[in-house]
Image (cartoon, rainbow over all chains, first blue to last red; front, side):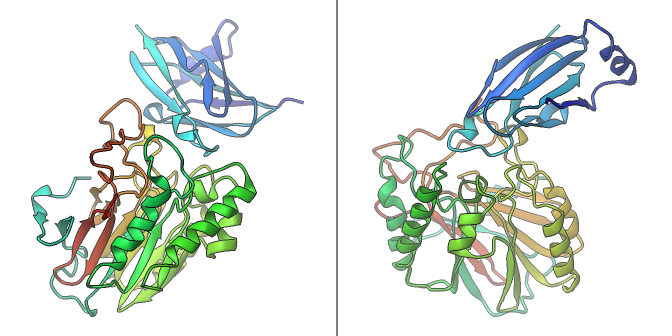
Length: 115
Length: 291
């Protein structure tokens, strides 16, 4: 049985958080496995609420976005939902921060926030 | 946080290295209470690594041991600040690497050797194999009036010290006076050096907060495979070179991939460090002979 975990990003305002529960919020699935995220490049729209739906194919991984102060653990068999509203255009690195083996250091991706 | 003044670097004659002249203990820069001594820091030996970043990986550690054994002024003791071995998913191979590592470093002339884990040693099994070979992953010891604290920020794969260790640290520090000389040894940086490259400790700020009341604290760490000096307040943090391959300066390139191996200068970026604990305290970076 899957457990759904909601993590509201610190960057999400009360107003945008309210919008998240509305139907139609963009959901982007990201799967993790040693030693990659798929997709490793995720496009988001500036100011548009989004939910990253994180799953793991093999073991516990981390999902950390240092520039946004976001972090979650991705547990196999669970779906971790990470909500955010990008407030700045640009490229934002995300990475696995749970050591997962020889290749862990290369396990990263990028959020591309488009105006 | 400000990088320490690079002008303090002094060229040394007669040693394959550069000295970082620094008041290690800002509260007592010229009034050392303890006898002079020095120790050597090895870091990130990654025994078992095979790859293009160091085609000579099978021999680099032995060369480093020989380099230190050849020093005319042998250190009081030696510390290894983690990533003794390169990670493997195979638990038997992990133990084989630790066994071989221990055999190689047993050739050190100095027999007082202190080990610490890195994430490559301990994160996949929460330190189980490491403890079998090298004992407790965090501990203290005292040497000639200086209190050493070895912290473990790697056995938790999420790079945390954890509440239990932080409570232990707080209890140990309560026994110190504000002027005591304290050296902290860690694998990962306790501060946010480069979080997007995972060069941080998740709860390292809590350890730094505990250390801040003490005026004479210095931290030595590894993990980032290069010499680096930075302060958090009055506390200096000094990263050591590795003995397997060099990594780029923080943020200097898009990815933290190893620097390319240079066959013409195979030991470039590798080395050990001598730390002299005296009123004229200084760090001396020592290249590996023959590497």
